[in-house]
Length: 120
Image (cartoon, rainbow, N blue to C red):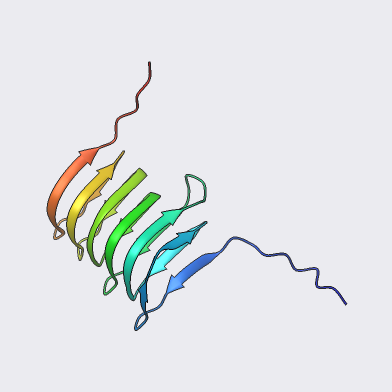
C-alpha cells in the first residue's frame, strides 16, 4: 500500500537544549531555540524566515530573506527582505539588510550595511 501523503514545506526547529555544529539549508521557516555554530542558508522564496528565539544562539553566518533575532547572534547576517532585532537580542557582526527594525533594548555591536536596489 502506497502512502498518499506528500512532503510539505514546514518549520524546521533547533530545540532548546540542542547544539548543532555545521551548515544548515532550509526552505520555509527555521526556528532556533538552541545553539547553532555554522552557516544558515535559505533555498525558499522571499517569505522564508529564520527566527532566533530568546535563549537561542547562533555563531556563524545567516543568509535568508527575513531574519528575526531575539537571542544572541555573532554572525554576518544578510536579510534580503528584512532584518528585525527584538528587545532581548544581542547581535555582534555585520548586518546587511533591505529593511531594518530595531526594538528598544536591543544591543547591536558591529556594522549596519543597507542593501540598495540597483536599477539601471
